[in-house]
Length: 162
Image (cartoon, rainbow, N blue to C red; front, side):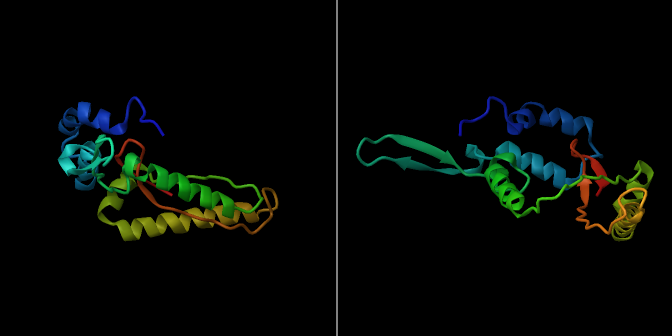
């Protein structure tokens, strides 16, 4: 697989410092660590090793990866393999993706009271889905639900949703 022309790491290296400065106080330590890991991934900053052919002396330098679970370079292949395995397990029935998002004011409260607020989010979302699905005007059935908590949005800011 060839390297794409532009990677997340390239964007972070080129614009990360300015973005971190502009968003100081609004970015968590975990988010800062992730950005740093992605910036350093497979660069000399993390060290590496040299591979040399004994016959022709062709040499390749391979830099170490950050091994962060959110890094697209480190986890891209693993994520694709995992997804393929999960898709093979799916039943031949329709699936629907429904998102329940906390309003911003409640999300701010959730940041300090995670267990209580996230428990309420899961209870409210599951009860809503079960009630609507059971109604004969809609589906008239008992459904199965898989609910996953996401605390960051695509902009890497706090955005709790399930």
